[in-house]
Amino acid sequence: MSLLRCAAIVPGALLFAAPAQAQIEDEQLWEQVNVNVPLTPEVRVTLEQIGRWGDRADGISQTEYGAVLGWKTSKAIEFGFGYRRVGLFSATGPSVHENRLRQQMVVTHGKLFARFRVDERFNPGGDQVGVRIRPLLRRNFPLSHKRLAFFASHESFILPNSTRWGQRSGYERMRNMLGVTVPFITRKAMLDIGYLNQFRFGRAGARPVMEHALSLQLTINAIGPILHD
Image 1 (tube, rainbow, N blue to C red):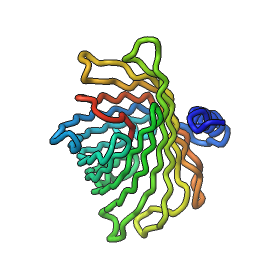
Image 2 (cartoon, rainbow, N blue to C red; image 1 turned 45 degrees about the vertical axis):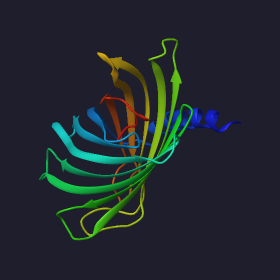
Image 3 (cartoon, rainbow, N blue to C red; image 1 turned 30 degrees about the vertical axis):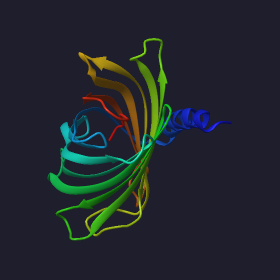
């Protein structure tokens, strides 16, 4: 079986296999806006804004603001370094604001995209740095209209270390998504609309959580691969 065919099948299989394990469920709305600013033909800055709302949080659950500096070394490979300010909100507890750094490599092969990302989390609860490894795979399937495409993606969250402020090492969660990409007003803006399923594994005595989200992502000046966070 070819690599492309495997990439198309695996995310879907994970998407439908995970719900049987879920004990807690939540319905959410995720939105993201990306603005790409080219500096040279090989270098660009991407400005990002993210908002997430959920029933369990009784409103907004997360905000993110940041930027990524991307450097394209070839037609197929792009490296990036970025920063985000992340707000985490709860209906029952205090809000927390983290600073996060990230490094990533994006590889393009036709309609298949792979991203390998490493995050460093700086939490006010302690001086230890929480590291996350986040491999992502996405496959686009062009539709009859050349500007429309169906897509499927999978992302895993692997935590190599534990911290005193709450991060626990291990395979923490996975995200699976199905959706469509459509032009938005102009040819340079693209809108991803999809269903996102996030499964948080039950670890350290906690119950597993299944999150169902309507995901809306607008990319302005769409140059390069469009991927989700």
